[in-house]
Image (cartoon, rainbow, N blue to C red; front, side, top):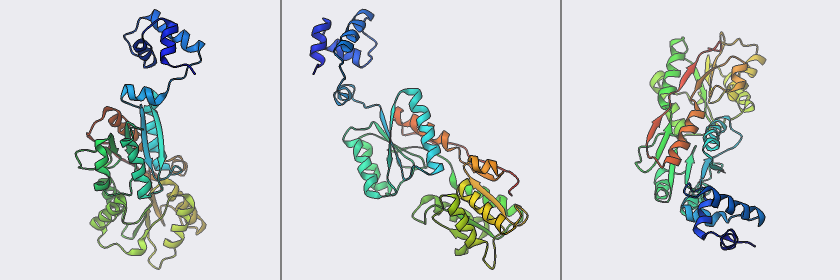
Length: 316
């Protein structure tokens, strides 16, 4: 098997010149670059990527920790990351964890092993005190706000968005408002939703919060629980437009009119919600993913807020 020394000898150049050609170094004459490339093609040489990475002291690979790969919100974040990675010629490694803390830490160890230049965390199961020690091995960027100085972040002010959404429903005359979440109170997002609800409406009736909602089927199941209560809610804030779609379909089965009998608002401005003309809170997650990628390759600890927007449609 040919190696870099064989190529240098046949091309009549130094080993360092071959190395520069392999790494696209600008300071190589066109004649030498052409000679080296001709020999590489003749010998069908494939560089040892690990060795090249060691020389460059970077892998040009960014890892993306995401709990699931069939979730619209995480897909939007990943889409943003991929947009920028293609433009800048980086490789992205998707690291699904299913919120397993040990799997999450195993992904972070890839920084220590120099397998990645940086990691973007779309959502986490570990506390920050378990994550921050890995920042000394490579760049860690969060898709939520954190005040830890060693962690950069691209984030939305989720609390403000939840507060504004609940206030909007209250201003429209709703006092019986329910909501759905993906996870329980171990989730920062769920905690913020509950806090915002309590600030606008006061005490939260336990039956007005439905957890483990990710899909249209989950929305149907949530609506089945909520819309048969003695004090049926007059408005539901869903944690995604797919969940909101399930709620919409179940309400239709009960012959309820939207928004006269039930107001519905979802999240993330997804195609299924647009088709049904559902109101939504767009956290602009594609932009969050793009910004997170930029911070990762710039090795920046900056905190960048991406604005959300509430899109009002006929469902409220």
